[in-house]
Image 1 (cartoon, helix red, strand yellow):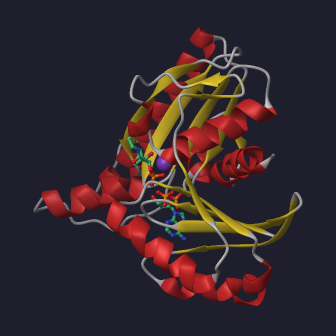
Image 2: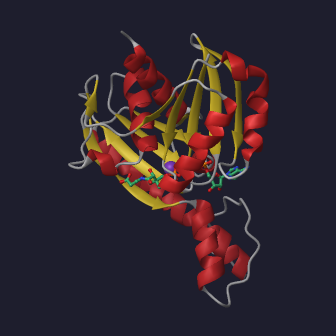
Length: 244
Ligand SMILES: Nc1ncnc2c1ncn2[C@@H]1O[C@H](COP(=O)(O)OP(=O)(O)O)[C@@H](O)[C@H]1O
Ligand SMILES: CC(C)(COP(=O)(O)O)[C@@H](O)C(=O)NCCC(=O)O
Ligand SMILES: [K+]
């Protein structure tokens, strides 16, 4: 049984796979070891752990020690790579790319032989374009929803508002409306830009993942929601690397 871990800046997603079958899964927080409780019953069946993380080095080491308390199985951290099975990273310095982006892109590339856009709406939003030939054409990094809400709350003295998940993009008539509608309006504009890029580059599909995936779809993103895209790519890569 293999434990797959996607440790992002906000949340940790885990999944237990056994020969291609999902045995169990969960979401937790890296700083709160409670997430490990759900794994207790399976601990002695874990034969290996594969991790994709964008957390700081300090938090990565904390994660490594949490995992060492759970299991003595080997823990493998996977990072962005220059290329794999026909997918070519467009970064000149691949080590600088977030592991989650590479793993999501790899899963997308393996499930489609056509050009694809990968959107990860997490703490930050990332957008990456991959051509039909597997060339990573580049991407974008933007602040995510909670990050934008936080910055408005902390960096402006007189913006008092109640954040809501409203998808209303009409002009607001109160501070709360102006903020919430503004964030929806901004996201809808981003969705329009993604559609333009996808058309221009001749990509055939958009895959969206991350905690705010449904919000993007709600704001018009024409995409297939793939909730575990990072874990899917991580699983494929770890499997390939373990093959003799
Ligand atoms: N239950 C939840 N807890 C925290 N964030 C959530 C939750 N549901 C949706 N979200 C949204 O998901 C985003 C974080 O997405 P996630 O994919 O978990 O991020 P990361 O991979 O960076 O940890 C937040 O910006 C938030 O708006
Ligand atoms: C852009 C990210 C912060 C997104 O992470 P997330 O929101 O999923 O936690 C992460 O992929 C990252 O730290 N990237 C490093 C910089 C780069 O990809 O170029
Ligand atoms: K992200």
